[in-house]
Image 1 (cartoon, rainbow, N blue to C red):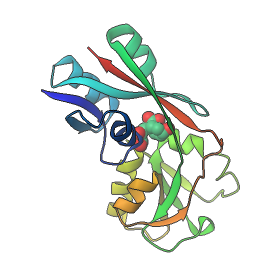
Image 2 (image 1 turned 90 degrees about the vertical axis):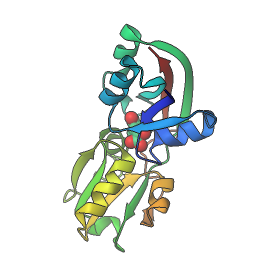
Image 3 (image 1 turned 45 degrees about the vertical axis):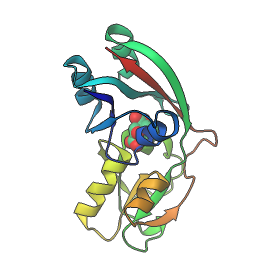
Length: 178
Ligand SMILES: O=C(O)C(=O)C[C@]1(C(=O)O)C=C[C@@H](O)C=C1
């Protein structure tokens, strides 16, 4: 049994939280929260790290409700969320037409992008998953909102840093078990 399940791929904010607080556990990445809850139910993983709320964008899906009904809450971790804009091409914010990211990260940067009406936002399963979508997409005027770690690990250009609307943007993660 793998000790910990979390939202992947590498360099999501779940992964950054894991590295900071739970580096000793064996782990496995999952595509979305449903798959994580299912893996807890069938015993593929012993524990899971799940985001429950963000200081500016609010509750993460219905995770808090699901946890309170069916799972044990073991520990709480809070991570400052500094969002970055990355692209495979030398764009500026004004030249970007399409942005991939997790829906919570899109919400956390709403004000930052409010004057760029020509941008289309596309929701991905995670901020690091958005990097994979960007790389598959190959469009010149496309970008991602993700962690600096995900941008650097995938050799993207860092167009902007700390683009979150709230200076003290932070997400609360629960360590849970069945
Ligand atoms: O997409 C990621 O990198 C995640 O870890 C998910 C998630 C979330 O579930 O809210 C975690 C923190 C950020 O607020 C944005 C997205």
